[in-house]
Image 1: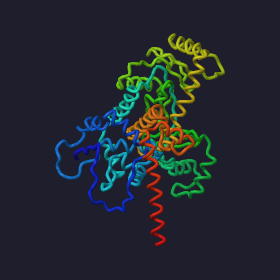
Image 2: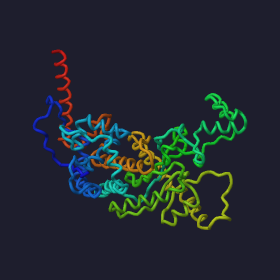
Image 3: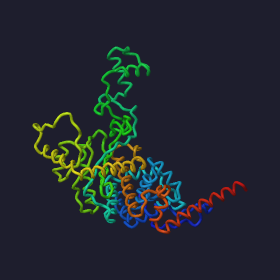
Image 4: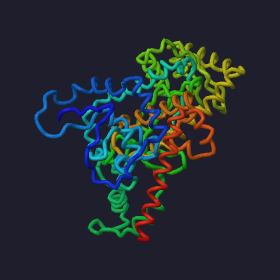
Length: 453
């Protein structure tokens, strides 16, 4: 399949089956976002980057959607708080302003959700990584990127799998088959009798030493997911998302997806190194020097590794019943723990901790709670990492637009800050917004006239 290309200006068809009201001057926010992407020549860059993953010679048939349109639709998922690809496809087909944002004329259909899936499977992970780094390059070009001090935090994402579907890793039995076998082994039922659901529940309720561990149980539908406790207290199959946030610019420098059973102490250094790699690829000469995290990241070997990498850590030490013993540990571990303990007593550490708790948690609120990523609708770490990384890139674009023009999401124009935010937009954008209201009011008037006729 040949790769489609997004045109800067499309010529509408001469005759369109419409009543003359299907017009939109575009949403002011999406117009500014398109201007930002056009200034960075995003479409030309992404088409040149993805060209080798498509057929170079046309062999008939319709070409695929342009890569710029595909990534814009993923951006819409974040800005419109849509978690599924079906919802994104429906929203883009329904909105005239989003059609203009995508560059799809009225006489053409917007991409279907299956097309989004095929495009995601066609493009490798490295393309999504480079799109994320491209957004950071835009921030660096606008002098909005610092990167010297970062905050690290993690959260859980609900997987697209149910606890009722888990099976034993050793035997492949589901929960009912496993409990039935236990009932037969202790002679609760006869070997040839099948227990009822009530009998299974009563036996399982009285059974002692019950545990559901990832070493013994797995999901056959999503093997990469892990059993864990979510933020709201529920036990569910989930993934772990970890952010590395620039505490000065409030931009996310790295967003990693991992199985939920990986401890924070094991992933801290890898995430910070990935953030440093993204800074290097974005053309930012800054080196990460300071790392702030919560007490869940405190471990002697983690602090020693960060010190070896040239990172100064500001990680609170959790309260312990007994004093640490260093007789069986290397001296480097003791030196790293004591150095971190001295640093967290300074006023500088308290300032970084306040910024970390504010800005790291805010990124999760934007990306997961109001950006449609708290629950995954794809299966596997690889597929989820692609979608999540572009969602975080959309968050970074929103922060860039907020610093440049005063608004970071299209819905900001509907709140109390809407009139104040409009002051940051050009006069043409305000005029287009007023024109859009006029068209809607005219459409309502025409509809009422037809009903009363």
